[in-house]
Image (cartoon, rainbow, N blue to C red; front, top):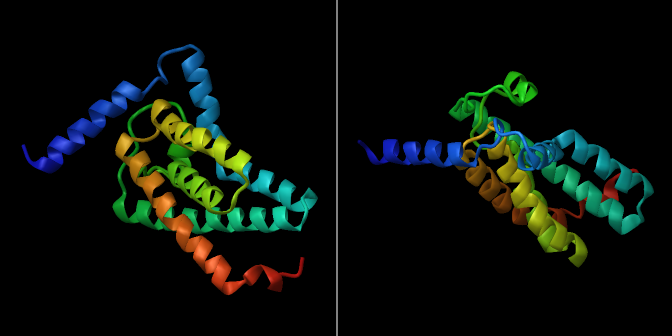
Length: 182
């Protein structure tokens, strides 16, 4: 057995242990909510609301998070369609399985990583505390619901964490927000 095969087997084994999709109960219900809460359209709507009704600093923050989500999604899609790793077999998450059959890296976990990373650098302390709990749980819920392997989530989360400082530096250096018409 090669080292790669050994690591793959460990990945599948840990993923099966973390998967609760076939076990009815509170843990599955919470995992389902957390797994869906990372959907980009929820975040888009939430950030749009912050932008519409927030003050100028909240608008700036919402715009930075939204652009971070878009950049992260683009990078993740390029990687997914390059690597083409199939999702774990299962029935939950049909919409994900149909629209995005590839699992590596996890887009939700990358989004969780970039959100906690951006929030860490420029967010208020109360949001930092929320994101420290929420982001990892949302990412792990993707494994719990059977739509990702453990390695998909780890890679996605790390990718998001690595992207966030680059986005902060770019946004600070380009000062692009002052040129927007709103």
